[in-house]
Length: 223
Image 1 (cartoon, rainbow, N blue to C red):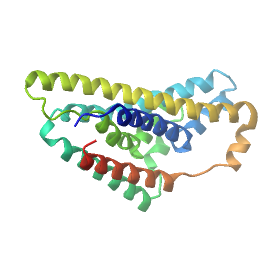
Image 2 (image 1 turned 90 degrees about the vertical axis):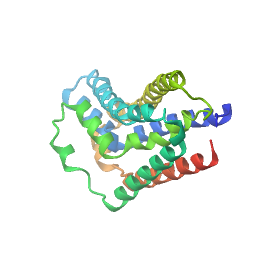
Image 3 (image 1 turned 135 degrees about the vertical axis):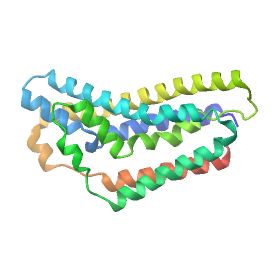
């Protein structure tokens, strides 16, 4: 069933807000950008670090979304795929609620390899999975389209959608995290960061569960 303009707009806002949410979450790396700027004592070190974090996050989003852009051409399985994706996201959220420990391998990544760290952190925390139900909703199509040409056109469109979703989400994340990092770097300092560190692990896990439920509901509702 094709999306109406209101539903499509709401889904794109969900992409933006999920990016802001990821950016605010310190687990996605903005404290590392602050540390890099303070340690190197160069103003340019901060935007450079944020850029590296953004690059890694973008690659992680694409690594999750691009495979789905291909399998969404299987129109007869569209509802099943969306429900399956929702269940995977819920399972990831439940796992993170049960297992609160941060993956040890992230601590072994050298601090200068921020892009690699960001990619691994996003994958380990299921950041890309959070976008899947939203992305599949954006890609909802009329099941009446059939044939090789329709499938080819659909695949191309969905790949473009995946790129736009990943870019918009990463831009929102970088801007949100960048604002916080800039305020702390120029005005508050690392001491403030160490005293006011906050943990969003439980909220992160619950948000994954809610997004998964939303994906399953929207698939059943035909949106």
